[in-house]
Image (cartoon, helix red, strand yellow):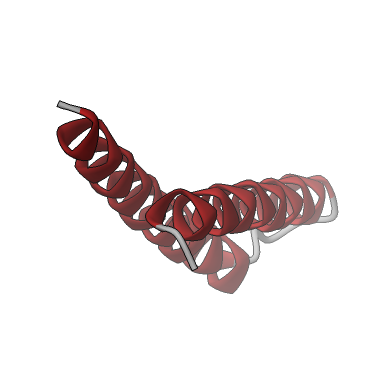
Length: 71
């Protein structure tokens, strides 16, 4: 398996994490309209966003390794 293949799989995972985070944010916003905000959803969204950022950093590092190999 090539590094670029792993980077691509991680990029797809990043998109999925972003979708999950957005879903949690939407659910949290809806809970405000019903009264009390759901703080657990807000906390979960923040963790998902942090995880996405970490995966994005890994993608950048791995793709940088591919660029180094081309030189």
